Image 1: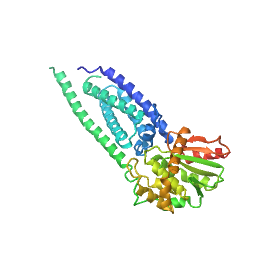
Image 2: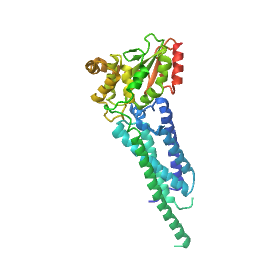
Image 3: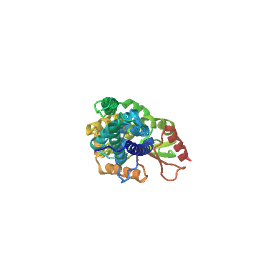
Image 4: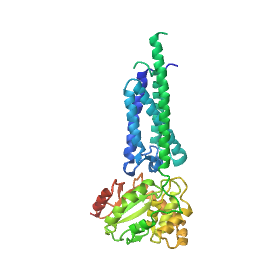
Length: 143
Length: 243
């Protein structure tokens, strides 16, 4: 099966990363000062996850790491060439792997689901798929 | 195949190999992050045989009147309502970093009193923990219990809130009559109080802990404040509520 044009993949990745920056920024702002994001369908999943010790890494809110990751992915999507393809793939893999771990924590350890975290995990999964496809199909080719 | 095409293919193959190495490093980074995440709370208490901070808590609260879950002079102009979950790590941080300044500057002086109210959000264990605090409050040790619990808080959902742990906290907090405390913490009235304050927090629109509300001559009824980011911000709110 032929891969989509690289321009299409970059466009999709740009959209996903921009969306991700918005979601992660909302989570970070909502959680600053001890609050939590508002769960759209009600319930207290977002609150329970935000109060969890796993919501921070080395004293920094996980959402801040998320913003940083999405900004890197946006940069990789906007740039051309092998370095951008490799960087996008590597950052998306780290983001996808850590999202898997966080989702595992939500389901089996914290026992609460935060819809905003799920949205972010889905975005990271799609970004990993998009960046992997871009790297595998186009690395070593002319931009 | 031309020489140019062969060179391009070889370069592409080399880059794919490089990508494999990059993928390996990325996976290693994820593993390191997971290990850091798992270890960050590994020494955070939950051990009934090794309680921390007994003397520290006693010293912090020494000489301040306690009535139920209220800390401070009964006639203080301002009442600061704190809605918190004893299992919540953010509440623990707040209790250790922000509240001591408030207790020292505003409560000890008689200007404000602090009312601890359970807002159970972490899991079901927060309910017996909160009830145990209220039962300690019936013997004038509610705030000692709360503060000592925070200093020995374990990892949430790890099952550390056992009868043994709660009893150790109660004893460390100076609860004199443990048999009465045991009866009180399991009573319907106390368990209903935990539910009632949780409902009260929800009615005030709070969606995180710790959350604060103010009552005083300068406040309109019970004024929801949310979570002030610093002791200074909380002190300002107390000054406003004092009128």
